[in-house]
Structures are given as structure tokens and as C-alpha cells.
Image 1: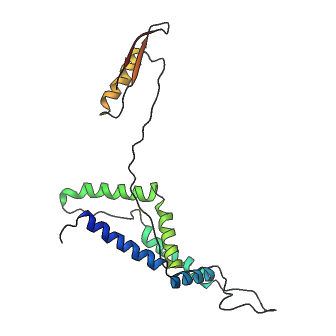
Image 2: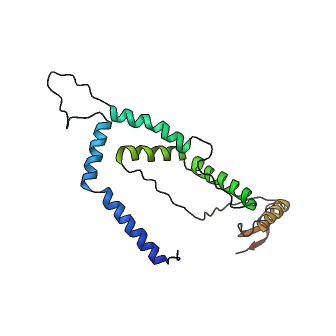
Image 3: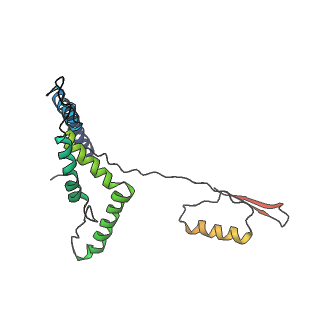
Length: 191
């Protein structure tokens, strides 16, 4: 298969997204979802209106079925320690595949509450006919500024060494050396 250019991929994804949104907003599907939610909550007034003088008991079969299926489905998708496993391509890839498996499982299950994401996805799929999870990657740089007062020359030297070893991640903006009585004797500014 030939490699697609960026515009082709954007066009393809855009049309698929439009189709998905159109299908989700169809009037018939919306009515079916509303009816499914009513059944889930035990409200069957539209199909079986209650009669005066009769019992107001309702059937919760839909709710019972969905809640009964969820543990089995959760066991399939999240029942083991590894939600995803990367298979090595060759013998040299075994360590990398194990590390990727551990990392992705940690990010999904620990950092992103993967169990609850799967639970919500499956429950929405059973109840509303569509289960959707939004996934994104967020890269951002955060800047932190710290101010240190009354550092001795040894403490400043240690801080400067840490800055030098940080591969440009840290920067000393200004340093003022003081004499023993707290008076500045020299000031340096860097950028």
C-alpha cells in the first residue's frame, strides 16, 4: 500500500468522523437510546402504561442483563495484569517488547484509570449502542522557577554543577555572592 500524504489522511479521517457523527445523531438511534435508558431505569410507561388500582412494580430485566454482563466483559478486557502485550519480532526485541508492555499497561491502568475507562466504554456500548473513548497525547513543557537565598559558595557550586549536568534543562539566571556580613560583593547574570 502506498504511503498517503497528510491531506489525504486528513480528508479520510474527516469523512469517517462526519459519518460517525451523522450515524450517532440519527433520529431513530436517538429514540432507541432514550427507550433503552427508560428500560434500564425500569420505566416502561410508554409500552405498558400502569393501570389504576394495579401494582406499580416494574421489570428491571435490561438493567439486570447489562449489570450481569459487565463483570464478564471486564474480566475479558481487564482481568489480567496486562491489558496489552507487545510481541517481539525477533530475539533482539524481547527486552524492548517487555518494557513497552509494562509501560503501556502502567500508563493506561495507573495514570489514566484504565479500569474505569473500560467500564464506562462497555456500559455505554451495551446501553447506548455506542461506546466512545477519547484518546490524545499531550506534550507540554512546564517551566519552574526557584529562588535560593543565602547559599554558601559550596552550596552554590553544587547547584551550578547540577545545572551543568542537566543537559540544558536548568539555567542560573542571576547569582550574587555575599561577604560574611550579608553584603553583596559581586553579581553575575546569565541568559
